[in-house]
Length: 388
Image: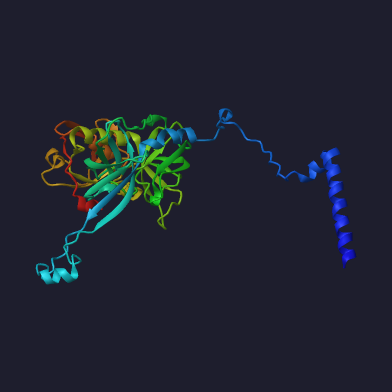
């Protein structure tokens, strides 16, 4: 045993001596093994911020320009108060049951979008977004939440104007309506399903869509940019970030986007918005007739060589049309020289006339054409209950 300890001590002494010699005379041999092992950095190519160039096909600049002007709209509608419990005045009853039987008003929150059209705080949205709302809040892109008041609405075009108490807001720029063409790239900006501000991309699929049964006055832009619930009232912008329309409706069998969305064009939006801001509502011309499109069958029945025009199916009693001598069965061909192609065109032409002014209507009756002078009336305000 003693001999083993002696051998062990000698071995340790020799090893320490050898280590000392190496450390003294050949430190580089030990340096490589004693240094801690470090991982080598992974080399990647990273572009510097000052060299970033947005490639053709990117719409980030248009989105960046338009997004600050698009807001989220939150509305609440209070229900009728619940009947008061007969024992609520009993102190002992209140002691045990507290206020759980108090009169209650329940608020239903809904979501939509809007577009700031003026730095003075005017916001355009859809009528159906704020219809019957008791309270309206607007969430700006910078995080601020402001209470909004209704300046006026126009159910027949599904447009409304709100006002918030703020100045120097980031207002959107309106596009030239004559520069919108089928095939142009557009971006839809809004708050779909309440997830937050979202941008989707598509093209203008069609212009002047009507006869959809959505609004009384229809002249929609059709787009395949994804529009979903919550996008209503949001912006449809071009690749310059300019407003070309206000998103309003979708065609859907499931409730989600199916690639067919409709936006109210900026020309109609501007016209309605300016009237609402100036006078609190929209004033339109009216003559008091019920009209329908001329089908090939009707054209054959009336011995017409074309299907152009609008058939007067009814005349309201004591209306400007009745006073002027218009009758059911008359075919309206022109209004102040403008051709009437169908009932939608007729409705828009008459609506653009000013009340109390005279208009010349070209009609066909009993195989002959002649003019009738009509004094234009004011279109009655529709009952909200009949609109939805």
